[in-house]
Image 1 (tube, rainbow, N blue to C red):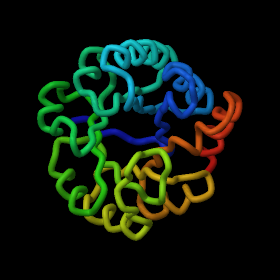
Image 2: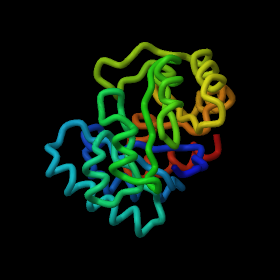
Image 3: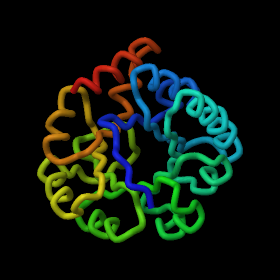
Image 4: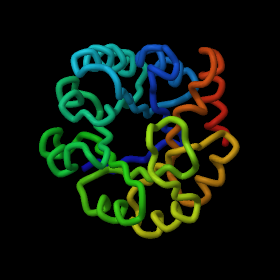
Length: 208
């Protein structure tokens, strides 16, 4: 397993929300200073997502950006991406580790303290917890954990890097980081705007 240091901002792509390709979003996030990006695609067929991710990874490599694939360890393996982000219903982290090897970055989504404590026993490089606040980026979201829930997770998982996600904005990001998150994962608060706005908002998060 790697010992990673997460950047403060962890942008996540969403092609349906923006109408832009994943590759274009990677370029815009990178222009704003992002170095660690997740490709999230819930609607395309696997072949189509593979093709989109292949182009996005080529862009990321040229920009020095680490790129993780959401959910699909098989696509991460086929592309040689930097790693995979797994949900509760995806391939178990132990199996993903065997598949991708020790050099891959593996993250795991959790939605409560019990899941976070379980994830801390897995061979993962970071744990994500959320939604911290109400979010519109996910259909049928899990119950909000709030800042108090975030603090409990931080206390419970020890030194494992912690990513907070769900309803995070430029305004509330400092409170989230103060509550113990190492990084904030953001979708809507970055992608709601034109290309220049996306890059500007990304850059502003790094000043939060």
